[in-house]
Image (tube, each protein chain N blue to C red):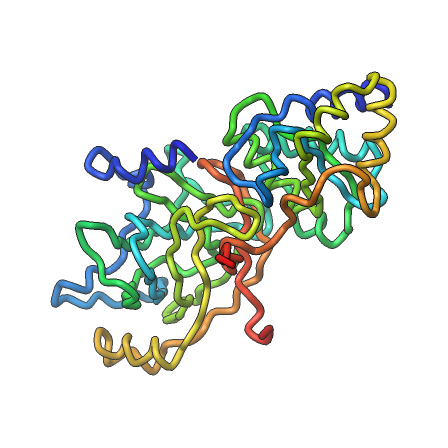
Length: 213
Length: 155
């Protein structure tokens, strides 16, 4: 806990924890890159009800056969990170921020979250696993970023509350990629993928059953 | 068997107080243990050791799906002496494997520590697998808090 609190006030001193991961598309720039023949696009929308710090949502390439994440020559996971910040330095309360990334097609896990760039929650005890087909444009969902929230058991922990609204996401995506909006589809994750635990806090993340009230 | 009980019992009484408890009267620092209906001390010791290895990075993979599907039952003694983060990760691992974490009140903890070792071990062996442990109160159980946070609500 103390480490998390220190991280909360040490943004200026922070260094990227997962620099080997590809960044998402910069939607502030006029260029709109599209997936290549062997690539796919993911779309998600982080948001926060209040100060949630600086976050990276991590997606790792995953091999379902071996249950391991892919790593580069330096042994670092391969994938992408999606950035979202709501701090005293920026961010809008409650706004669902469109995020887009282009990745090699293949199998992935929603692997975790780096909080304030120095503290990483890793979903190695059970993560959503999913496949991206070549040329696909996949809506992952919306993630409400919560930082050190007091839980029902009294402990304070991070969270990313999951929800999905494909219609609303499609309307938002259309503004950035009008020519690709018809290709936007929902994902089909399978919960429970495990992989090597490397990070700070080891937890599980299960995408809720949409049929559940 | 006796050695494993000693290990679990020693874990139970050296708990490190941490922030967050279900009640001001119940705290890991007073004593805590893992419970799973029908569990034995052997299963508890094995699970604790597996989760401790995972928490320290020594065990690279676990098969959570099989564990959950198998309905494993067991118990674990409270906090670990090798760091708060490892303790939390070990705790998370155990909860995901179907264990529940119980913590004691100050009075329960004192009474527990005053018992002769043999009696403590005997009682712990029962607490580990009891349907409703006679000591302690439920502090944590597995919930999908990261994706579906059960936030504390003011009354």
